[in-house]
Amino acid sequence: MSPQNRTKENVSELKLYLRCPRQVYFVNHGYELLPDITCSYIENLLIKELGFKYPESIKHTSKDDDIDKILETEFYNTAENLEDIYPDELIINVSSELVETAKNNVYKHLETIATNLNSTISYHGKNLLLEQITPCELPLS
Image (cartoon, rainbow, N blue to C red):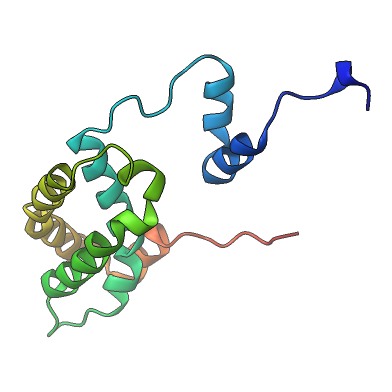
């Protein structure tokens, strides 16, 4: 390949691409990624990770079981591992106080999340809800 036909990608872009392909596009078009990490941004990371646990949490509920307790357990597990899940975002230049504030803010909404999940289960049924929120697996070929 001649030097004129080479692409401008580098190793750091590969890492960025593996995390989110769209970020490579934005970086190459002059946008700065994560200029400031705010409390709201950390809250969104935590809510997103917690959302990935909804299908498994719902599967483990029964009529006698309270989804509040299951979500609380999932919240604590996710919150405890958040810095490991997002090391690039949360370890560099982010105070532990900001992360703790975000965790506390999300924790305050767990009851509402559980109430909404319970009412959706009551209205639509557990199986339909699981069909709608369970991510599909794509073949690797």
